[in-house]
Image (cartoon, rainbow, N blue to C red; front, side, top):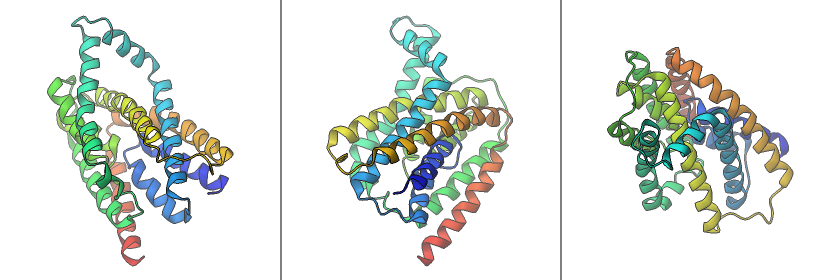
Length: 264
């Protein structure tokens, strides 16, 4: 992997983690198009680094909200902050269960199967199109909503299913206010990213013996900067009900990916 590849893939991760177009799917497409020949350990290390960068960008953008969540969690009072913290935890349960029980099966899907990614992107497009047609409301996230949104997040582990797209679309289809939907979607992923990173590191599958520190820093920087831009931009887009644009984009990229995957 070259420095240019690292910058491109880092930017792709930063943008697509928050925009509803599937970061995992685009990373797989990007690696295939760039002819990434990294050994599995190197590729996994790079993926972990850029995911950490986007998690950090989320923390920066939502720093006030995260402080409130931690304060509410450790007050042990049945107030709005404490309940919101519990909802975040509840939303993580489905993805944690799927990630632990079906770890090997999921890893097999991240092997450059662009055809599969293409079909999943089309499903993402359908979700976004349906959400864009939903009516605006002022409803808050309930505990039941939190679990259902968590199920959507678990399904979005599949490459090509946008995590932010699936969770925001599910929230909106459940009748939740769009701004609250975006906020909940972005906050609920931070613990999962950090948990996944810890699991990968402790598993011993990651090796830094042959890692190029400069390339990792380049990927991290690109993912962090573009992550902050995309996160801030996405909040404004959801409020203005512009998800249909991303639905069209996902559909087009999905079709191209299917054609590319079929003939290669």
